[in-house]
Image 1 (cartoon, one colour):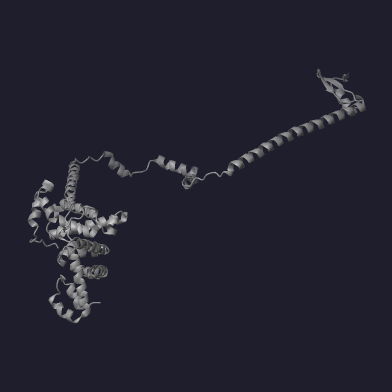
Image 2 (cartoon, helix red, strand yellow):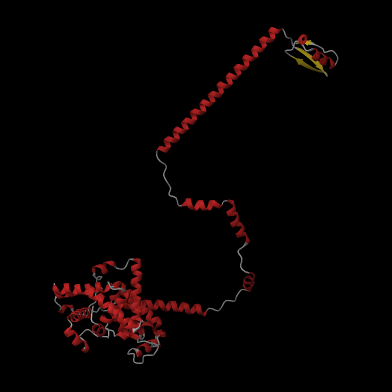
Length: 230
Length: 206
């Protein structure tokens, strides 16, 4: 911390070459200010003693180039300023008066876009920047195994269908033959009736065992039925 | 600052330049350039800290000078106006360079200017090599100390101690009041004490 008179003298434009007259007495009795003064004088001398540099020779060329460039810009600016004013289009006033609106088609397109898939654009934007990942090597094995299993399942299914159909046919065949055997055992006959000129076969029905009501009904169609043996 | 300065030593030259502006560099502007080129370059060099940026800032300074010379109305001293343009161009350039981080870092850090960039007024033939080397080393260290100051204090230090301007001229150049010049110089003294004392001690003790 310096004494106030020292600060004041320094900041009053002292050149630091030699102490100002009014500071000499103070410096003589204040060792701290004297030391500061000596340091500052050394700094000032060191700074003043720094070699002055001559401007490099290329500076002139660069200044001339910059000036010429400025000339060109000025000329262009002058030419632009000299351009005649353009007349205002007649429809401008009308447009301003009615207000400039965005075309209605734009509104429709935006609405359609939002309504059709509001999340699509957002999702596209979000996923577009995702890093592409490479499929792991074991994926091929997984796919192959999965396809093999499906093929086997399909074959098994086909085999089951064939076997199932065969079994059903066998059962039906067995039932059929069982019914035939039963009919033969009961002595049933096959008859046919003629109704309206058409012959209607009556199979597996023994006329003798026929219900009397049914016999009566049969009798109503064209008199007594013409029974023919098959 | 609005009072015209009638005793400007450059008045005639500036008026000549304004009258012959259409002649470009070949008119009186060449005389003006010759008169100011070293002062402008030195200020730019001390503020930017390297020859490349100093060249760019000097070019910028003379470009602005030429473009705005017609509008100069002697409301301040012409030399103060030139210094102001040079200081601002240098600070702007350094700010741009530091934001891009491409400012000739090797020359700033090592203190070694580019080859061929050093143009010394001294006759080095008469100076012993050892002393010349020692002087260069000291100057590089002083330059580094100047560069460690803030741009405002750097400008004021360069103008005060290297260009030897008065307080009034500095105030006019930096467009601040004399009080501001004094307070900034006071802080510059403290900073220089901190930065330069070890440098000078080391140099003179060794």
